[in-house]
Image 1: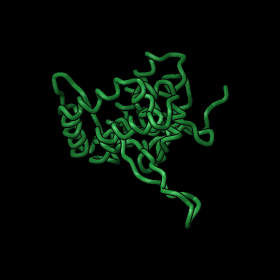
Image 2 (image 1 turned 30 degrees about the vertical axis):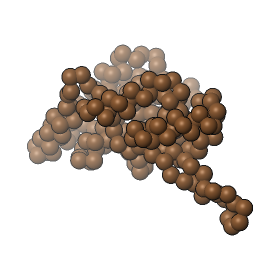
Image 3 (image 1 turned 90 degrees about the vertical axis):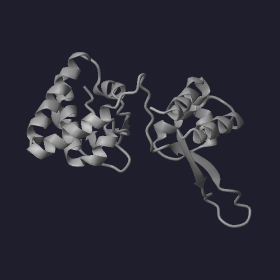
Image 4 (image 1 turned 120 degrees about the horizontal axis):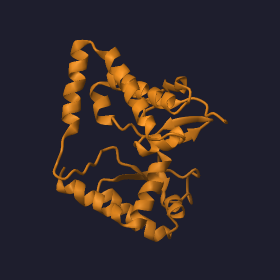
Length: 214
């Protein structure tokens, strides 16, 4: 953990900045000042000020969206914001669980123990479900950092909680993530087959098929 991490996350203590950050993150793509301001319930000018502060802190990235109208009178490109791709973590005192997770993933790969790892992940998902009896799976996934959202009747996961490790060991981590989600569904009394590998750039590799209406 660095002082930059602390400084950046301290900005989110302000409720307006926190609301703006949440509005941008929830879109999963480029968000204009006006859109963010409306979502946060503040003026466009105030939103622009706080959004730029979040960019300076590295929590958001900015760019420009070309106007649909071309040529004279089309106006300047609109400034847009998106969530930064980097990660921020705070632990007091500093902890480095990611390093140990990386080592363990390498051991699993070296031993060829992928099936055992998937079985353990499925059991972990079932254990997780025990503390959330009667809750919808999307609420549990939200609490675990997956950032679920509905699209076309399916439940997609905007964030991968294991992003750093998945870049080092994508096949292992994605298969374990799938098993974890399947175990969670099963433990909640849902159909584990709803969880499937469905990778999309910048999102989790798992999605859940059509949401039950029951």
